[in-house]
Image (cartoon, rainbow, N blue to C red; front, side, top):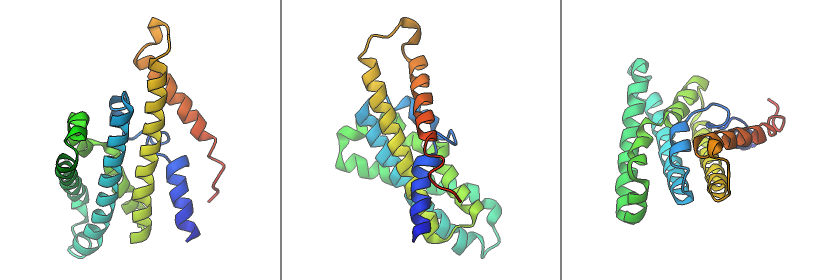
Amino acid sequence: MKEYFWIFISNILIDNLILSKFLGMCPFMGVSQKIENSIGIGYATIFVITLTSVLSWITNFFILKPCNLMYLNTMFYILLIAVSVQLLEIIIRSISFKMYNSLGIFLPLITTNCAVLAVPLVSLKLNSSFLENFVQGISSSIGFFVVITIFSSLRNRISRINTSYAFKGVPVSLVTAAIISIAFMGFNGLIKF
């Protein structure tokens, strides 16, 4: 049980998808201008990554491996991601049309988010058990949510202060992302494997 806890903490603080692997940078920079959108895309990403992780493990061990079709795994993962995103889009549209409109094009773009595809591929490479795969998926996506929310909050606050013209927009966003990354590097000594 301790092992799952350390995988969980590690994926959120140390091996974060955005800060250490630089995956998911498009929504990280694109959606993070408004806190509400960042939270919405964060929750959507948690749903999609977790569901895709579980479904990809089931697909691997009950369809692809027994049928000797492991060379098709990436194609199956993309199909599972697309189905998960469509399911999420239907759910969000029926529950909160306002959130659906505010997320706009970024909701279907979760399908092309490299972070979503990376989690099942990494789990396949590690040959994880079902529970490890689930913990990997949910903790990676929570790490994504935490970082995009922190970044959005800081970006919102920085937009309200007076900065020089040369620093406005993308430059200050990149500097902020770098500072967050450096701050998260402080967690590197937390877990020793």
